[in-house]
Image (cartoon, rainbow, N blue to C red; front, side):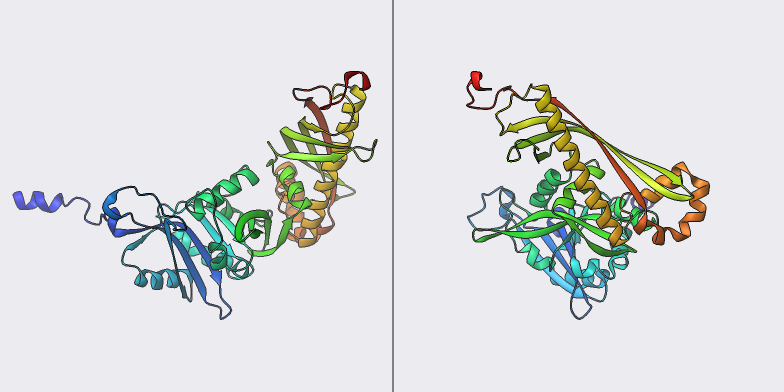
Length: 375
């Protein structure tokens, strides 16, 4: 009886102590020139004696390890042979894909990550310009790990994070293309600092291009990612005057329709803004001034969004889900369009309408330093 009880209550026989684990916070996948897949991991450095110690200047609380193989799984197996501890994926926060891999064999290597039940589907994936190992060698000021730094950086640039779960779902969606944040390195004195530069656009499970610069901000308007951002617009009169406006709220609607049997899309953007800087000599409460600011902001936002949509059409990537919008509103018509959507999308007629309201002019009605009688 005692022997039977002991056999049935073996406890957590496969449990591993924390001291036996190599805890991964950041992973990078890349494709080398010879076609092999390189896996690079940022592993939290164990603290000696179990006590919290201040890091010496120039030291890092993490270790970087890499290995290559025929597949991501093969690379992980070879990397495990180099490590004295078992690789633990449960604390993985960020996944960075090198640009070479994102343009080929991307979906195939993702299969390894989504099959491992230790890897959380809320991991945030990115695409980096160049080689992942070089990206990992860049500085991460204010944060101890690359994962912490990039998480904070992306939270400011992209309000709603894109997760591994959402990426995998979109890769299997033929009517809506996938996007990932695109990160690069900039020089700040002698240091190389990573930052979010734009969005990597995917088509047929492969990266088709990058939307950056002015188009990056146009895309943020389409994706409801602009709350808290600042837009600076130029007024018509005087032409040298600039107004900076903070985004209080925004709403983007995609309304599909048909004209002479062909689909068309109307994009409606409504936003409320506040004045954060006034370089003119006009009072911010002047109705004529406010009307001019709203008109300038309307033209400014519409230009950015139209430019972004045209760029996506040139890439052949329906990143805004126009096909899904047609399917939801007109399912019967979509049945006859679906097979031809890749040919229709690049020339699809899209009209952008923007409605801007300035709701807040800040603490000062008058421009700073302007005498009351001159305004």
